[in-house]
Amino acid sequence: MRIILFTGKGGVGKTTVAAATGVLCAERGLRTVVLSTDAAHSLADSFDAELGPEPVEVVPNLHAAEINVHDELKANWGLIRAFIKRNLVRVAGFSGVIAEEFAVFPGMEELFCLLKVKQLYQGGDYDVVLIDCAPTGATIRMLSFPDVAKWYMEKVFHIERIVVKMIRPIVNRIAPFELPADDVFGSVEELYAKLDGVKDVFCDPAITSVRLVMNPEKMVIKESQRAYAYLCLFGFPVDACIVNRVMPPEASSEY
Image 1 (cartoon, one colour):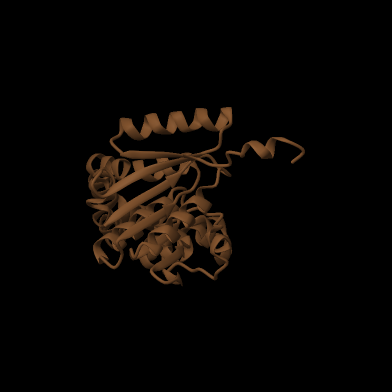
Image 2 (spheres, one colour):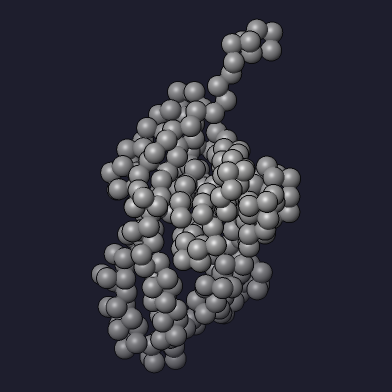
């Protein structure tokens, strides 16, 4: 399997390039899926098709999907989300709808993208997985997520779990909120276990590569240089830089 991530500054044409690459791969007979991880999806517009969280066929050999954070919450964040909602309703008096929104933490889209890519990788249903990433900052946050999660699980999680277990009986009697029970901690641990091995897949140049999409503009070039430096520094292979919106000579006249 080949996994290719397309990233770059917002508005440079990542979705267009990812969609076009998907069409080319499909025409060459490769079973291909294009996955959008941007909260402001536009992949469906590129293919002029109705897309959801599960891959659907848009042309022969080509499937596409747009990750929906709320659908993924139900599948991967159920107990934790229920715990957060109970506390928000009890302490802050939020309605169920508002509490539902607050249960979506920053970085959730990136986390669920990693889980979806791992699921597709292990499934083996596709030859090529193309990821239409959110703008550069969100992509970097996504790729660094396994390292951050590993640090938290190794340095903080087990100590926090022991401390909470000791003080939970007292706090739950006198405080207006409840402390997480063992099943909530177990869900966090299970979620982390699902991430196991993701970093190895993303850092293996035989499987994965990142492609920077850019325009020939000073600010875009500078951001692409910073992104390239970061990706190389942390071991993520970059195999191409695609310059979009290069105008032909005839476009410099009255056009």
